[in-house]
Image 1 (tube, rainbow, N blue to C red):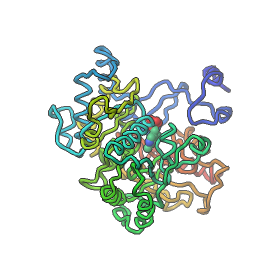
Image 2: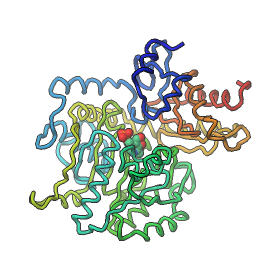
Image 3: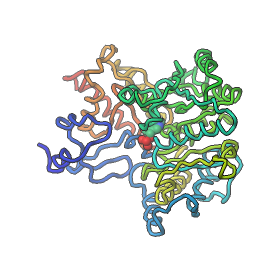
Image 4: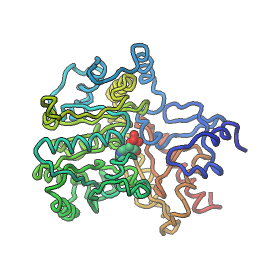
Length: 468
Ligand SMILES: Cc1ncc(COP(=O)(O)O)c(C=O)c1O
């Protein structure tokens, strides 16, 4: 029976990333409330948001400190053009975000952080209002900076196989997810996809910090384009939409050294992997001190997933190439209406307060391993759970047949598991036949045990019916 709301939804609403025909058999969930990791449906059911609502709810739903910051700012002013204006909130946020991205301890980016900019690698923040647009900003900044450094032939980009950087045309061009980009091939610019990457299962993998076997092939691909590359863009360590894949952070160390030797810029797309998801404020920090990119793109968890906001962090060296007399046309003439939106910035400051005061990184370090442990335990007894990997507050498994054989993608097993899990109380929207757990960073051990159990029961129901 379709509810009145679902019938009205059918009539007017085109949902994102959805084959709308699926709604005939699987109507959208009617959300009436959300708190912490939990969604409440109109029929009273509670569903655990195991994918943090497309990876953004780093602090869970409805965090009271974020709500309070939003309300307080809305009573001051909600949005003012950011060109040629400033305000205390936005400057404070830039100072604190830079300190966090530069790897300083929480005393430099939490609520009691000192005012003013601290020394560090990143020195400037540029604002956009969503992840894809911020990726476009980073690509444009890199291209323009190269020209201004005297390298006007550096107009190409390289990226990583299985990478994903968003849905706008530039972001799709540098991405490598055929499902989302192939249809638009005539609009896309060419990009070299580097690989195969040094995929690993996570920090416990003995080869975690060693990309030496895979590096020579990647280096040869880079060497072939050394004179024409403007920048290399990548998701640091964790590739999200490409299948929740993890690669050795050693690759980033090698890439940094190669890029420095060849005057190529590095762009880290931290949109999914940053803000504590991998256990560090930037996933780039996993490569060790001093291995930071020239540009880092953040969004999603920046506001704890409350409001759209995105930033591109960069170095003074890159920024300085844009300083000149107006007539020299070196200004970065990119604007998005809601750049630096005051409501989003106020919430983002509150999010940094919470990351520091609730020791979110400490919680991820203590609790996150339960996620990968939970999936590893399933894989030990059930061959349907293949290729378990995990880091920080993320773990993933590729579903297989009960005998370990490969699934037919046309059977949409992951999708069926998703549907079965809803009935058991967890939102586990998959990536094809990859099931993954990407819950709020605040998730408890009990919640993790619960969601792992839901996954087990749902997979068993779909792949071994009659045994549940
Ligand atoms: C790594 C990465 N880059 C870019 C994006 C695009 O961000 P947005 O959806 O805000 O445009 C995403 C979104 O999932 C992402 O995971």
